[in-house]
Amino acid sequence: MTNKTPAVRPARPYFSSGPCAKPPGWDADKIDTRILGRSHRSGLGKERLRYCIGLMRGMLELPDTHRIGIVPASDTGAFEMAMWSMLGQRPVTALAWESFGEGWVTDTVKQLQLNPTVIRADYGQLPDLKQVDWRHDVLFTWNGTTSGVRVPDGDWIADDREGLSFADATSAVFAYDIPWDKVDVATFSWQKVLGGEGAHGVLILGPRAVERLESFTPDRPLPKIFRLTKGGKLIESIFTGETINTPSMLAVEDAIFALEWANSVGGLQGLMARTDANASALGRIVAEREWLGYLASDPSTRSKTSVCLSVAGANADVIKRFAKLLEQEDVAYDIAGYRDAPPGLRIWCGATVDAADIDALGPWLDWAWENLQ
Image (cartoon, rainbow, N blue to C red; front, side, top):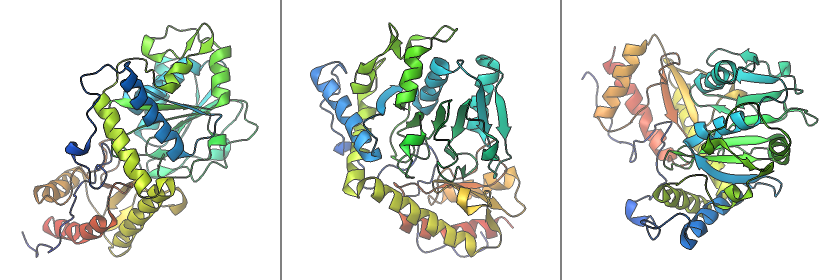
C-alpha cells in the first residue's frame, strides 16, 4: 500500500444497494419471535401481518382509497403480478433507463407479447417524459436502482390519464414524498429503504387499478400467486393480512422492527431527512474530488438512495479491485456498480445508513484510489 491508512473507519460499512443496511440498533435478539413455529393463518399470525400492513400504510401516508398488501417474490414478484393481471386492455408504454426497466420491457415484449411503445435513455439519463401518451398504461421505475436516475416528481403523470400508471418504486418509497393520487399501481420490497429482508413484495393498488382488475380479464393463464380476483371481484383479504401463499413470519417481524424504528426517528419525514443528509454527505465527497463524479449529471433526476458514481478512467477490472480493497479493510461492502451499468461505484444513501459513516468513507475512497494508481 502506498498511502497512509485513514484513522477513522465507518462504524457500519454496509453500503449495498440491496439488500441494504439494517436499521441502526438492529439485533436479531430484538426481533419478536412469538409467531415462529406458528401458522401465518393463526390469530396471532393474522394480527402480526395486519400490524405490519398498518405500519406501512401509516408510514407512507397512503390515502384510504389505496390498498396495500404483502405478496410473494419481492418487488419483482409484485410488479410481475400487476403486469400479468392488468395489462392488455389498452396500449402499453414502457420506460427504460436502467436494467430493471429493461426487464419490464422484455416481459412486456417477449412474454406478454403486447407490442409496447418503448421509450429509452442511456444509463445516467432520463427519457423525455413529455413523449408519454397517457391513453396508454405506463410502466416505469420511480428510482432506477442500477443507474442512479429517478423521475423528478409526479407532475409528468397526467391527472386525466386514461391508462394506469405502474410504478416500480422499490428504491423510492420511504425516501421520497410520493404523490399517491398520481400512482395507480406501486410495488416495492422491504430490503431497500427499510433495510428489511428479501423474498417478499408489497403491492399498492389505487382505485383505478381495482376497477381494472374487476372489469378486465386478461386473455392469458395466471398462476395462483398472480391472482388478485375471484369471481370478478378483488380478493380483499390479500390486503388485510391473508397472504396468497405462506410468508416468512421472521421476515415479517424483521420488517415490523424496521417500521417501528422508522417511527422512532420521525416516520416518513424522518426517513426522508436521513436520506437527504446521507446524499448531501456523499455530495460533499464528490465535490471535493476531481476523479469522482455522478453517473446522473442532472441533480433534479439524481437518486438520493442508490447513488451511482463514475471514477475517472476506470474500467470494470479497476472497479472490481477498488471495491475489493475496501471490503478487505472492512470499511465498505458491495459498492461496485451494477454489472450492466457503466463501470463505477454505487453507494446506498437510504435512511438506514448513518451520515457519519458516509463522511468516514471519503478518506477511504481516496486511499483506494491512490493505491490503484
